[in-house]
Image (cartoon, rainbow, N blue to C red; front, side, top):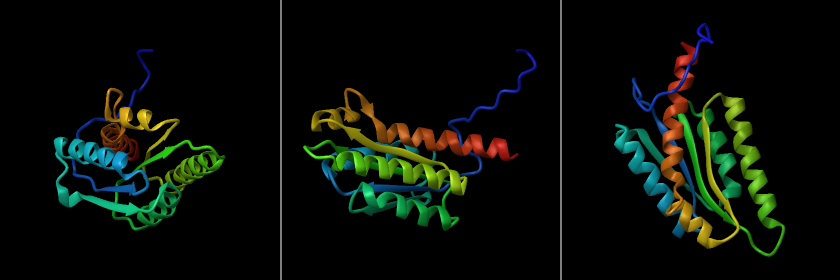
Length: 159
C-alpha cells in the first residue's frame, strides 16, 4: 500500500470559499439551532460573514429548487441544506424526505458543487432536539465541517 496516492480534504480553506445555507422554516425551533451551529462552525474555521448567504425556504420540499438555483448562480463553493422532517401519522414524511434527499443529491452530482444534506429525518421531536445541539451533537455544525472538507477535497482533485 506504499504506492497508493491518498487524497483527503482539510478543515482549512485557502483561498476562501463562499457558502450558501438553505434553512427550512418548518420546524423552525429545531432548524434555528442547526443554522446557529452551522454558522458558528464556519466562523470558527475562518469564514467571514460576507462569504455566508442564508436563504430561508418554507419547508424541506422547497429546498432542492433553491439549491439548484444557487448552484447555477456560480456564487457558491458549497451549499448546505438544513431542515427537520419529523414523522407524523401519514406517509407524507416518506415523500418529503425522499424528494428532498434525492433532489439535493441530483443537484450536487449535476453541478459538481458539494450540496451537504443536513435535513434531519427523525421519528420524534426529541430526536430532532438531540441532533440540533442536544446530546447527539449539532448536525448543522457537522454539515459546515463537511462542506469545508468537500470544498478542500474538490479543489485538490481539480488541481
